[in-house]
Length: 192
Image 1: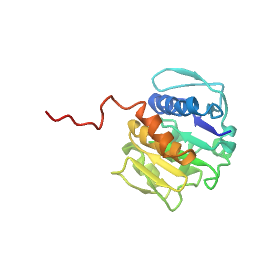
Image 2: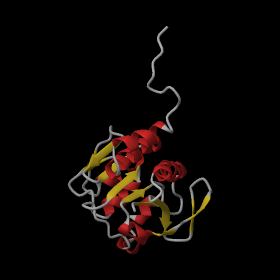
Image 3: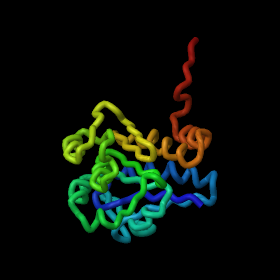
Image 4: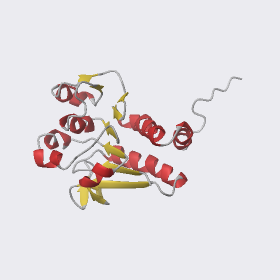
């Protein structure tokens, strides 16, 4: 059984968590053994837009997941300074796919997994990510190195999650999932 966890925290960016949730659950539709969970430090977290979500478990479940996804939000700036929070993660990029949307990259960097790598994040977090010694590619919406992926701009989640799905399964599963959310006719040209 494969397992993906989406890490939530207070003041998370709504679309990051919900888009990842939706896309990953489209994989679950194909693979009934695939498990998707939202995890956090509490039994519920409130988004920046005021939506409360109930978590399915705690962040320690990330340590055994095949895929760990960090969304973004203003709270990432304080979480990177919280050694107790960071200490709960024991991630292994040799065995796990670890990815982030926008400022979620700050958490991956604080955990030491972006050391010596390039990455991307939302423009308001460029300088903070650079402070971790990361080569920030400001004009890229998706940057991957092995099992680590960072994306910038909420809609880049489609490419990021697509990349992660292909790493876990194959190109066909990625194509099927992504095709299910694209606007009808996208990529098709009609010449009269």
